[in-house]
Length: 228
Image (cartoon, rainbow, N blue to C red):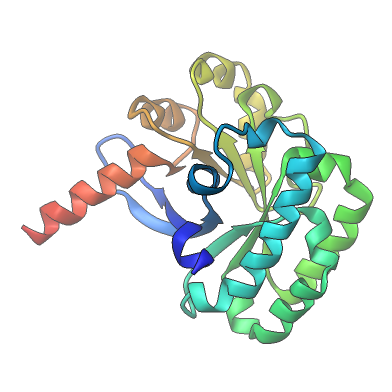
């Protein structure tokens, strides 16, 4: 019942201005906004520091246990984890239940700040994940921190960069760092895209993959248009 009530999914899609969007990968996640309404009224969860981080470890365990009931086989997908969650019995159980073929389609997303804070543990977790045949994405890369961490060097193949107000100017200043990402074979994804302008800005910077409410809306329009 918890999973049905609070787990959501959202596609990353490849495209650009004037181009049809094609789904690339589906992220499955527990919605903090949905959790807050019935369970944490008037509590600013994300501002709770280490208490919030401890809570996300519990959510990781739920996602790992629910994964095989959520995600169909052979569907490219991602889930968010804390670095520490790779060393839990829930992760071991998840890996034991996953075929090598299925793991090839799985991307584990770690927050950039979580990787930096627990880098020694991350290096071990990276080895575990690579041995399973899965891939790594670095999540929550804010515009000001693009280039702060060498994404290719730490073994990730995807960089998820937050779109936010004022991002255009900052990302233009980080153009060289973005080019370095793509030159290294790292896929940048512009996420939290709620403004159609992000497609144009992304395209001007060589970004062709997007995720967010504006992406959801555009893909829905495309599907309805195709059905008509």
